Length: 477
Image (cartoon, rainbow, N blue to C red; front, side, top):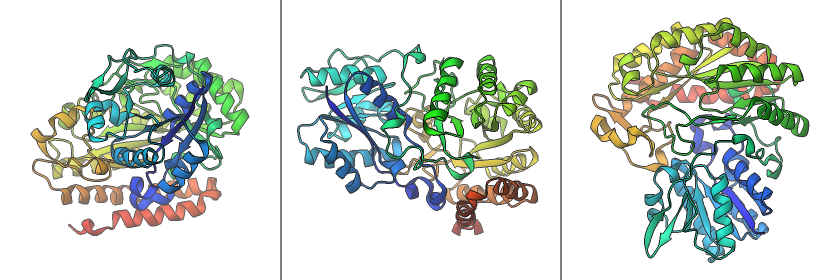
């Protein structure tokens, strides 16, 4: 048995949310919870330190690590946090020079060789889904064997980076244990979604399927692959039952890439929620071309669904086609309209700065968002993440700033030909002002506040941050 510490390096709310940090998410890292769960099931002693969610700095994180006295330490990282993971790992290595340090997550999976070359403090890396790989890797390390025959592992051998053959996707997701929420300190009281992503607390998120079959050029699907796999409705309902009974959870966010892709399964989950009388609220994300059944939406509403998030990206069909979204503007209009008709709030995600973006296409996206019955929007900057098709072709269509620290969908790191960073920021602010400073939207938020007065202080902080973000220096361009 080994003592294994899994950590998410400190990545502050200010770094992740900017002026809206006070109302940002502190939800736990599901990847760490899954790895902790399978390691514990295999007999290992496990400690999870989710520094980002627990709002710990490097010094505080290191103190927690010292208390545990680990045999192996593993980190996870997204692109903007990879250097933070390296910095934290270096502090651990200084303290425990002989301890193997592992790295996994989206950034490493996208560019494993470069990561091991750039950050030599990491001894081993897990490529792709990690639940099976980490068990075999830990078994090899605790037996003083090189993981030469472990699929999905990368490491150095004779001064060169060696990447073992990939591990096939896990097909029977129901074979996996539930995430190890009980390994978290103060769960769920210290963990919450971003302010407008929930109605009731305590709330948490789950993943009920893995993989996305679509080919959007701005997405990196290397961890879960394009092969869609599902937990059964029975497994999902059992997991919700566990959260309700053990942690008094009142709301669940389904973080699947595309929760609505298999509509019969969605209906079974809804029927199960109604039959069990959990009385929970829930939300999910979906593609607009999967929404065509008003009866299903009404069933979702009855079972507790209050919001569906849609990746709309742009009101330009040319841009959507180039981005390989495989949706039409008409499908967007229909999905949002049906969702509204069913009494469910629709939130639209937009991206500014895709190739062929112009001032006119951004104006059209703003007009379009105001014409359809959206209740919320988020407007992100195109970020060509490593592992995405856009990362490979970025220089053909504009200029890219290859600074991983800034690749967080908030900063402008890619500017398409014909535009400027200042113009992109100006239209982002304009979008938010024109969309939110309307009587209908303000009235909706007042109703939401009245239904949950406990959020009043956080709502005031959010409004202050919102005003700061939309009336910044670029708004006068």
